[in-house]
Length: 116
Length: 113
Image (cartoon, rainbow over all chains, first blue to last red; front, side, top):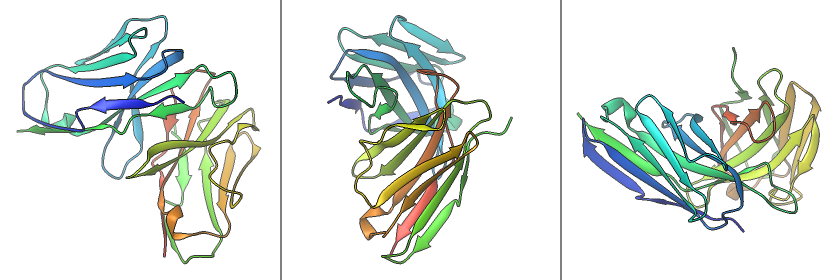
């Protein structure tokens, strides 16, 4: 069964710093990996999706990398801002021979606080 | 464009009552997913549909849970009878095609007393 782990569970940094959030998964047979942002009391906002054949994706100040063979992904946030404060979730779609292949398996998230 | 719409946003009810959660996916999206989020277990997939057909319900915790998608623009998740351990935030998500980004609604916060 696929398991997704995110480290650290919480992170607090001053504004302006570059930071890296880590995600690891136990089964490397994935279709894709997706990074989400969740604000308190809100749903999830998709940030980046990396297909299994890709190594990285970029959107603005965000860059996500994927090393499928080692079961790792990182989300890099450049020049962090207080508005980046949120919980960041990593999720994978796994190639199961049975059902559930299209659903996402989530990590528990990294709770990020950017201090002004 | 409207995103995924869920109702109600909050639901508080007593144990034993029937609970119905509703979801309207993004128009044109072929896949619809129901997830549950708790502090202990995080986000878990309950069931998903493709073209209104349930594909995998292995994540549904018990027979008390059921989901339907009578048409492309509407889905329900029903709990009957409800129990306090069902208290969680329930999310609906949709995607345009297989393995494309999933778009989430704001969720329904369910409290069973």
